[in-house]
Length: 538
Image (cartoon, rainbow, N blue to C red; front, top):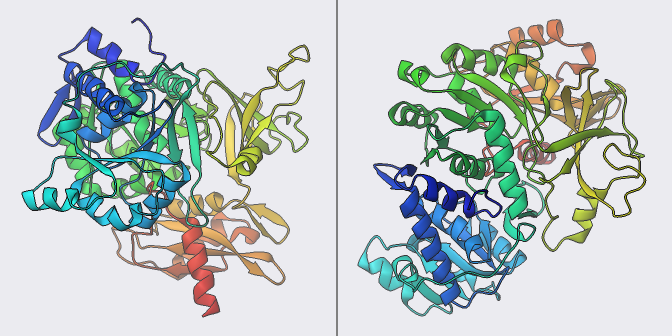
C-alpha cells in the first residue's frame, strides 16, 4: 500500500511504515500504530461476525477514548458507516440520530447504555449494542439483563476470528456527521471515504504535519474539525492526545505535559484560553495554532500571539458539508487579519450571485465550494439537500460548456467577498444577518469591535425586531476575567467611537459567564436570542 484512498488506510499505511510509533495517547496510556491497526481490524472482524451488511450504520456514543477511535475506523474497515454521536447529547437526542439514519449497531459504555435503555426501545432498526469494558460487576449484570438487543462486550467482539470486510471504494459512504443546532432537528451530513481522506491530505499539507507532530484532540470527535485531528495526524504518522477537558486550564496543562505541537479549537475556547497565563514550556513545542468553527476575534488573536509568539497562527474557514474551504497563511496574518484566506489545496472556492454568475472583486456573494471535499448530501433529507447542494451552472469557473455531466457543489449560505488579490473575507451568514436602519450588519462585525475594547469576556450579538429600525442590535456579554465586571457606560462610549451609528447596540445585557455552547463548543447564538424573546414575552 503506497497511498491512502480509504479512511482506515490512513492508519494501516502508518502501521506499515512505523508500527512502533505512538499514534494515540489518553491519560497515562498510549497505543502505537501497529496495535491501533490491529484493533481496527479486529473490530471490523467483530462487526462482520455480527452479520453487518455493507453500508450499515454504526453509532459511537462515547467520550474520547481508545475505543472511540478504533470503532470510528473499524466500522468503515468492515464496509459499514460510522456515526459519531456527541457525548454531551441526552438520550432523547441520541435516539433521534439512531432512528434518523437507521443505526444497526450502537457502541457505548455500560453507564450510557443504562441511561439509553428506554430510549433505545424506540429505535426499531437497532440490532446490536457493543458495550465497552464494565467498571463493576453490578454494571455488567445490569447491562445484560432483559435487553431487547444483542449485547456484546468489547473484549468479546475483538476476540472474533479475523475476516475481511465488505468491498468498498472511495466514493462509498464512510461517515454521517450530525450538525448541531438549537432549533429544529440536526441534519446528518454524509461523507465518503474520498471526502475524508482528501480532507486529511489537504489540511496536513498546508499545516505541514509530520511524524514528529503531537496534536491535541480537544474538540468533540463528532465535530468534523475534531475528527480531523485524527485523520491529519494519522496521514502524517504523528501522535494524537485525546482530551476530555472540564476547564480551559486543563487544555493548557495537557499541552505543557504532552509537548503538543499543533492546536485546533473553536474561537470561544480560544477567547477563554487567551485570558489565562500560559506555562512557558508550551511555547517551546507549539508549532501552530488554528481556529475553526467561526471567526477569531482580532483581540483574541493578538493575545494568543503574545502568549506563544513563535507559534504560527492559521485562520481557517470551513463547513461540515465540505469539511474545510479556506485558510490564511501565517505570513499574511499581519497584512490582512480579517481575511479567511484562500482555498485550501484541492478545493475551488467561488463567490456567486443569486443567478449563479461569478461576483466581481469585493462584490458580496455566496461562498460556493466545489471539488473532492464536497459531501454526499444530508441523510434521508432530499429537501434540505437540494437547498445546500446544487448544480453548478454551465460557464461557472471550472465548468466549460463542453462538459455534458453535471457537478454538484456546496452553496454555503455564507456571504463573503473576494478582493483583487484573491483573498476571501467573511461578511456573515444569511440567516444571521441583521437589517438595521436600512443597513445589513453581520453579528460578527459587532462582536469584533466589542472584543477589541477589551472590556468584555465573551459576547454575542443578534437582531431583535423593531418597529422603525427593522432590527435593533442586542448584545449579551460577560465580564472580562481580569476586571470581573463591565463598565457599561465606558463600553457604550467605545462603541460610539469605533462603530458607525447604525451598528451601535441598542441594548447590552450583562450576564455571568461563560455563555452557553452548542455541542461543538461554539457560542449558541440561536439559543441566546430565543431565550431573550421568551423573556420578553413572559
